[in-house]
Image (cartoon, rainbow, N blue to C red; front, top):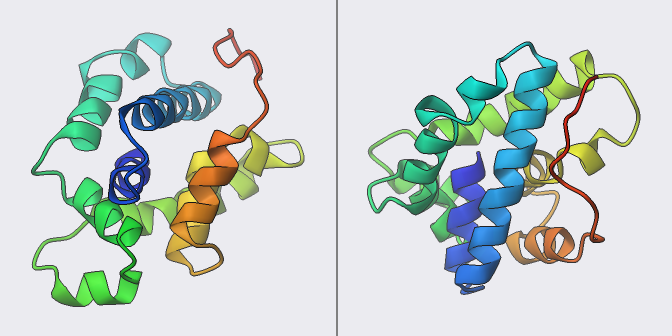
Length: 151
């Protein structure tokens, strides 16, 4: 899911700093959700967590990043799916994650805790355009983002 957002960032031509910030925030969301669901922080911060995330966000062969790139260039999810011969797993995963977060996580305004996850799902569902989603994310107020969360 984070790789789809990274691809959109690249497709929109927002630059390396925006991409780095997005992936950093995405790893924070991944950590927050993983810990809430019982994962060990060491798993999230290791090769199977951020290691895999970096590979899919920055790698030229990533199907999810390619999907996001094409979204950023203006194609619709339907157009992209119709022309792809491979599956970008993050597309359906984004919608499933939002449903799971709404069902299992406590609190209100969960979209503020997980703005990238919710934003990607909204873009895929046609509720928002990629530029709107990424501008909203980049204009998020500055706050402490890396802290030891105990939910």
